[in-house]
Image (cartoon, rainbow, N blue to C red):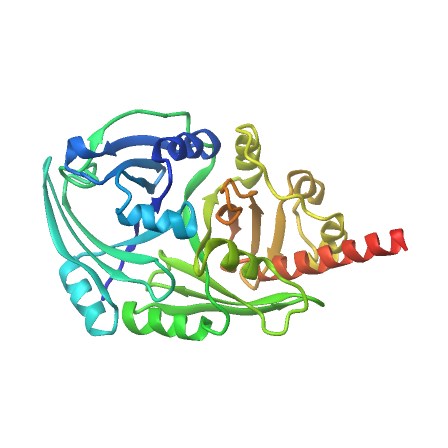
Length: 361
C-alpha cells in the first residue's frame, strides 16, 4: 500500500460555474480544463482548477438522479473525493479492499493525449467521503485523458506566496475518532502523527492527526469532546453538514501576512480574533522575534511546538450552510497543527463572553 500525495480534491457543488468563479476570484485558483457531455461526461459538468501544485475538480449534476445531486441535497457543496496518487492503482485498490475498505469503483484505464491514467475508488470510513487511487503515466499535464478539454475560463493572477495544500481537516461523529484512526492505519498504512484533546471551561474537542509515510497526505480528524456544556464548532459542523465530512483545507504559504493581504483584497473575509487572545499571547508564546503587532493587525494566530512556530489564519465560510472554510498556514519549522491556538481561542472567546456578561450585569 503506497500513497505518495494528494492527487486532487473533487467537490460536488450545486453550480460548478459559479463555484469556479468564486474560488478563482476569492482564492486565486484558475480554471484550466472542463468536462461535460461534449467530452463524454453525460450526467455531470466539471471544471478543473489549479493553483501551484493544488488541483481541485468542481463537479455538478446535470440530471436529478446523478450522485452529485444526491450529495448536494444532503450536504450542500462539499468535498466528495480526496484522491491519492500511487504508483500502482490496481494493487492499491485490491489491497485496500482486502484490508476492509468498501469498493466503490473498480479500476478504470483512461488513455489519450500522450498519457495513461488508471484510477479506482474505495469508500472512506466516515460519511459520504471516498478515496480514489490515481496512477499517472506519460504526459503529466493531462489530468484525465479524454475527459477534459483545455479552457482558460476564470484565470486571475495567483495569490502571492501560496505554495501547496498542507492538510485536509475532517470532522467525525462523537465517539468514532479512535476507530477512524485505526481504519487509516490498517487500510492505508497511515500512522498517528499527533494527538491532542482541547478543553476550555465550557467546550472542547478531541483531535488526532494521521498521515502517510512521508506526511504528504495529512488528515487532522476531530470529534466533539464528551460532556461539553456548550455546542462547539464540531457539533455545529456535523449538524449543518448532515454528518461527518471535510471541514476545511489548509493552504501552505511562505509569507502568511502577504497571503492574507492578497486574499483580503479579493473580498475574502477572515475570522475576527478576540482581543483576549493577543493579550495572552506573549506569555503563551514566550520569547520570539515575531512582530506581535503585525500578527494582531492581520488576525494571525501563533503556536509553538518543540520544533518551531506555526502561524495560521482562518477564513469565514463562503458556504451557504457556513460549514466548509479555508485555513492559511505558515510553518517556521513547526510540525504541529495549532492545538495551542485552538485552546487559546476557546478560552479567549469564553473570557470575552464573561466580560460581556459582567458589563450587562
